[in-house]
Image (cartoon, rainbow over all chains, first blue to last red; front, side, top):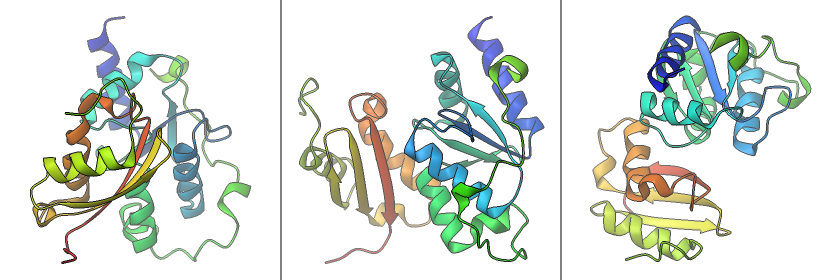
Length: 130
Length: 81
């Protein structure tokens, strides 16, 4: 598989999923604190999201960063647009912008601890999606 | 100017951010691998959050994720005199 094909597949995954998070590990088993925090925020907002684990193949991260012009992981995309990493997602969650972007701003505030919830959507894997 | 082989330090990151972004002041904490930077700069005004953070990441290029394992950023436009 050429790297350009991989880049196309990443772009397709971004285009085909309203909310998609590229992360280290999976929502069930994040492998990095920043990915874990971003997953917890998305789960507390309650909007299902797709997730791609970038760890199995280092080229995924290379190509993703080429698409987004962003050096770090995690990376969140909403409606095909790059939104940011953990810091920006956290700021947007605290200000309510994230809930607005996800169309759930009228939802009741989440009361359960984010980490106690299970993900709404099964994580996408490189094997079945990219 | 920075030593590319040596471990990164909060002081090095602060100096490079302040040298790389006009008018910026930075407060950087970290343990040599994971860093947190609060950066204030008039250059951020009118830019999206993503663009503001890119300006900071651009100071370090490919070192982010490598020599600088993780860099958390908070950007602010107001300047503290």
